[in-house]
Image (cartoon, rainbow, N blue to C red):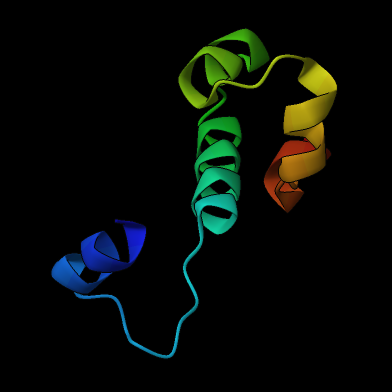
Length: 65
């Protein structure tokens, strides 16, 4: 299903899109938007904070703050 959705969305064929990569991107976007970890967990279905910490990379701007 994800493959068909990516095709319909116009993603390039050479890019590998997986459930994992989409989930990681979502966690990063939510974190960059300063969404609290508890809300991110509710959206993504993660069970603990450590799980989303493993997925997300803090942006340089957030590190400086």
